[in-house]
Image (cartoon, rainbow, N blue to C red):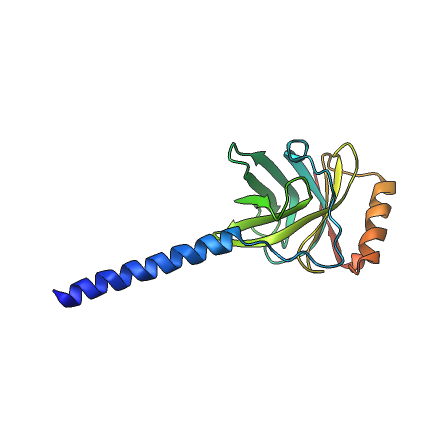
Length: 183
């Protein structure tokens, strides 16, 4: 009986520690790279809705995807639901993933953290945006992650060049961008 009680107590202790660790991971503030200046006066409501991916620095979860879009929904508790979708050109099928986002620090700043895998978050920093919330430039937490997003499936050459120049100035290799095919 003592052995069973010890196992139960050990199990509860492990579960409690695991729960605390999960809570810590979910609530911790991510380090924003020193070269990143996020958009101030970020209007969460205006950012909600569908965005088309115009370009990205490719990584394993988006390899071979076309027609990529991200849709954001604001929950009543202030968290943001994220729904990403793209067409896998190799598998010839749609792939979808749901995630969540919260502010990475103070609300009203374009610094968010996004999770598609439990308590593990990545930086999502809106660094440039047109005043009408029609296009956005987003940096991740390192020079390996960058996206150009638009409410339409194309952007003007003027905005494109402005975003590319800014990204280059911040150390991004824009020659490695994948320009997302949008049909």
